[in-house]
Image 1: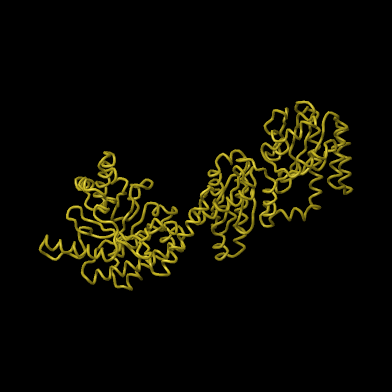
Image 2 (image 1 turned 180 degrees about the vertical axis):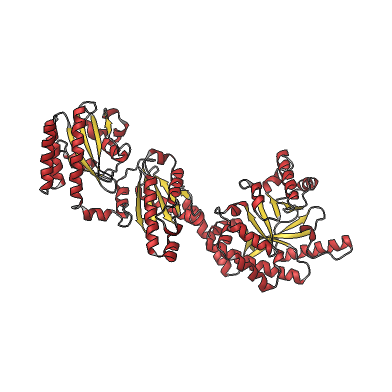
Length: 615
């Protein structure tokens, strides 16, 4: 093909475009002219819509049933040559269709037509977006010749012009499938994409993302700032998802359709990458406000429909927002049951709160040397007739921030009431520990709630000890918890780190966290007699704690042998079923009276109501 032929072809096609011929007429003429010039090829052109679907526009020598069969296919790997080229944004040659895995699902369509090879090239607009695919089919296994490569370069340019010219005609259709604010495919496009996907297990997946802070930004800075946040989120997700496709479903909801092998190989890592990209600040975000997101996802399984995958991903997202906000949850078959259990637990707690059946039970803390009761750990229980419901039965409810806050408020009130009675009888223990969650601290009410509640009953704050786990202390990577604990210690409260040894890099927390007690986790106590390693760890913690003037309490002491071993290595305090399970107020009161009487007998003196050994 010489330059004169190139110019002749270009002029013919450009003249049609200038006269306003529609895209079908222009591209049909182009394909016929190419096939006249290169008789060995069968030419085709397909559009790629904003939802990522293929639509044949011109293919004069391909039968209608073939074109109907491929119309609406989602681009993606292993979707023939054209679907793969469009998905990758690069030319793709199948030099032997019969043995090319990218054609495996379509051999019954293409081989009866005598087609043995296909070379496909993406058509891109001025912004570099793939808007179509131009292909040469061959009847023998082979790749393109230099002449054909030259011809295709000319055709790609002409096709891009014709498609751009056609855009304004399809403006209403495009608007119906595209989000006006972000430019991403919208919910209609998303629904269309889902309906066109096949149901091969593991062939695609879905990640749904919700922004966590859009309402706060709208309420604080206005909707202009909120829109900027959405635009930034859309851009970040689209760039991080490529070559997979991101959609805006509306409001603060986004979706990413996973088709690439890399994304499907590890959906959890893909989700972490998306959430990480989402939270990166840009200069476009005013006031340093950046999106924060929560994600849920699912991959299509055996016998599932696209609609079922969407429902599964939605369930996973809901579960993530309720229990792991800011992270990703992947659907698993039992998630609906887990959510039902959680809702049941929430209902159980809400009924108990409304009927005043939520009560503290007290597990005593003993001096391992004297047997004195030095304090309690307050544990939440629910009265149900003559039965007592343990916390494990309604633990799922504590993942709901509102319910957890209500539990904390009620527990504080009941503990303060009980302490008031113990103070009135002269037997109040110094140490009454209560566990607090990350939500308690980040809710911002503890500094007002605790002093107000104890002040209402006239109980000194020093009787309460704040117990937290290392997970709570690590929290969200900020200083809210540590700052709050320092403030409470300044008011005379003590702080205990519960379940010590089960968190990450436990010893490093002692450098930054204000703490008075370490509670050695039950897993170490269980192995103390049988395992020299466990004993060495506990001895090491005791030594370090002694140097830092921190008291150590062994949790889960269940045998006298464990208690004796703890005494021998210098552990002064313990709690567990060897001494007593958690008991109600009346039983706790009897234990305090008994301990008080024993102390009188042992010393002949009235014991201090605030055991100095804990200070």
